Each structure stands twice: as C-alpha cells, then as structure tokens.
Image (cartoon, rainbow, N blue to C red; front, top):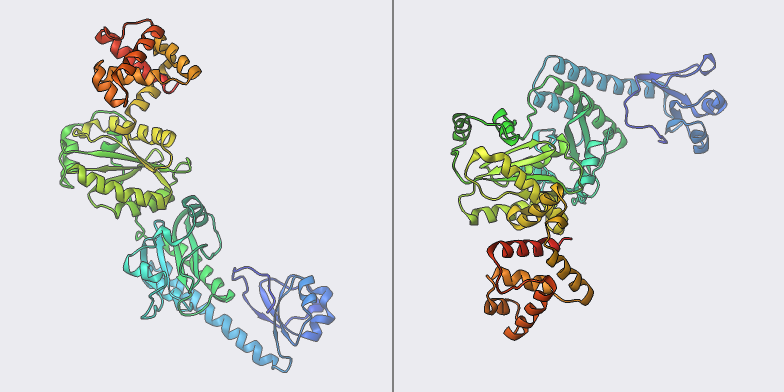
Length: 493
C-alpha cells in the first residue's frame, strides 16, 4: 500500500469505473488492473485505487494516488465482493452506534459497541485524565502498561509524560487528530489518544495502548471515528463531571471583601465538619510560566491536588487555583506543604500561602497575603515553588509602600549617607546600625551577633554617629524606629 491519506474515513463504497466517461470521486475506492491505470494515468489524480498488478511508485506519487497493490492473478469479482463486505460490516457497526446514541444509551454501552472493531481496549478520560470508563478486552496481565495506573489508581498521572507542564497542556489541548503522546515511559507499548471537544471546549479524551496489537493506519482511522461518535454521545450526557467545587456565592463574596452573615458561613462549613473560628490557611496557586490557568488545565491540576488531602476546600477564582485548609497544628501543615511542593513541581505550578487565621470572615485579607507570598516568592526566591507570607512580610510591606509613595522619601537622610559610604568604601555600617538597634542598642549583644570585639564595635558606632550626625547611644524610641526601618528600606534601594 502506498498512501499519503490522513485518518478520516471518507470512503463510502467500492466501484468499477469507466475512466473515459468522466472524473472519479474521492468518496469511492476504485478497482482496476494495473495496465488500465497506466493507460489512463493522465485522467487519474488524487483518487483511491486497488490495483490488480504492480504499479511504479513514481506514477503513484506524481499523481497523488493512494493505492493498494494486489497480485494480478487475483479474481476481480472476488476482490470486489470482499471489499463490499468490508464496507457493509463497518456501515452496520456505525449504524448501530448512531442508533444507540440517538436512543441516549449509557456511555458504557456505546463505548462497548465502539470498541468491538478495535484491536486494543480504550479508556474514556475526563480533562483531569481521570478514568470515566473502560471499553474493549483488556488482557489479564496488563502490568508494565499505562493500564496499570489507569485501572488501579483510576487516573493517568501527569508524570506519565516526560514533558514540561506547559508543553503537556498545550499538547493535550491542541491536537485535533489522534496522536501518540510524547515521552511515555512505557516503552514496551505505544499509546494513542484523541481529544473530545464540546462547542470548541476540550471535554475529555479517549486513550488506548498497543497492549493487544500494533496501531496500524486502519486502527488509527477507526480510533478517530470512535472519537467522533463519542463526541456525539457526550453532547447529551451528564456522566462527565468536573473535579472542582462550585465557587458558591458566599466564598466569592468573602474573597471580594463583601460581608456575609455568620449563619450562612457556619451552614456551609458545618457540612464538612468545620467551624467558623477554626484555624485556616489559604493557598493561591498559579502557572509557573506566568500564564493564566485555563479551565481545562485547572481541572487537571485540581484533581491531582485534591488527592493529597480530602479535607480541603478547592476551586478556581480569577485564573488561580484556591485551596483553603484547616491545619490542626504546625506539624500537619508542614507535612501537607511538603506533599504539595512535590506535586507542584510535577505540574509546573507555583503557590503562595497565607498565615494561619481563625476568622473565616476575613478570607479576603489572607487571600491578599497568599497572592503577596506568590509575587514576592517568585521575585526574591525563584528556586522554590511554595512560599509562606510570613517569610516575605517586610518585602511585601516595602513593596506596598513603594507603590503608594517613593521609598526613598521614607528613608532617613543619615541612613542614605551611610549607604553611600558603604557603597564607596565597602563598609557594612548600615547592617551594623540595624543590628545594633534591633538589640536595643546593647553593645555586648550586638558584638556577639556580629562576631566582633566590643572595642571594634564601639569604633564603628563612632564612625556611624559621625556620618549620620546623631548620638547613637542616646536615641529616642522614635529615632530608633525610623533608623531601623530606614536601614531595612536601604537594602532594596
């Protein structure tokens, strides 16, 4: 066979053509002797043929033909009847599928019918790669194939594909034709997937692996047709459910800062065994690439995240994944964060976490904290993927001040002179003053912290006093606060 055709099953029937009477249709496959094809080659272009006898491949390619070559001593009528039977077989199969779809039979029944012409079984997966159903005959021993995870865990982990998260989401979303996922670790088999769309939105996948036999072009074509019929079946189906919670109005109102009656909050929290004054933390999760999470990607990630811990409120909001946890103690919180870090790395996500709070009504403020932790963490500590707000409190404070006014205007002029001296002479006077004030202007404690002799520290404090034109040993409480905060500000100027 020589062909450059795709996987679309566009052929309707077989014909015995009279070439001289007109052009041939692309809807049929034509049965001809090789000698007749060669004689009328000028009238043949871009059609599908069965040739009884050998054809020069150059003739085939130059005329964009798709040809199956059979021995010339085969009987034409026998071949014609056999091919007609093949068309009749698949037409009957397809008619049965359409009849079941029209009758609104279950997705399982429709899938079982669809799988009857496939060598390998397939799974219907939602956008999170969670298994909805399995159709077709799976061998007793499927160890070492992707079916091991699909059947035993109920979903296909993202790490099955050795692609970055962004590459994986793009790859899964933008393939209209059946495709072989790149980078599967199961090298013993090849995997085949096809996307299912509803109104242009990615809704699900069908996926198979060559566990019973290889994927020939014919099998890939049938697989594509099964995908098309499953799309029809799913249009009116209610069997596909999203994995995230609906953002109920009370959560959205709280995140936007609107008041919500305590009775309403208590009603919703009681359903999961929570109380309004429990300890809570809020996590804001974003794409590590900086792009906004789309709905399909968010669903995919939420399903995996929800596997880590059941007692979590999870949903999408403003292009983020939001998690609200109820840690009973700091050890439990640390354990959850460690598991979350590992998963975030696999999914290509970043996360900011608020401080622990115990008034659910204040959700807005801790949502702001979690977003601030995300922003400051990506800026100041990019080698990590999860950041806590408490670690970036001052960075956020200074960023907020800088957005409302110039930080330099808040910095004591003496500290600015001190910073200029450090930059010019390589001294460390700003840090020395900051630690000195932090220890309440205590010489002994500051010298210990700086690993410095007391006399050396006194000498440096004398030089600092000259530069800032202040007696550092007799600072008022207000002066200490202004100088210490100025030292903090100078570090980012």
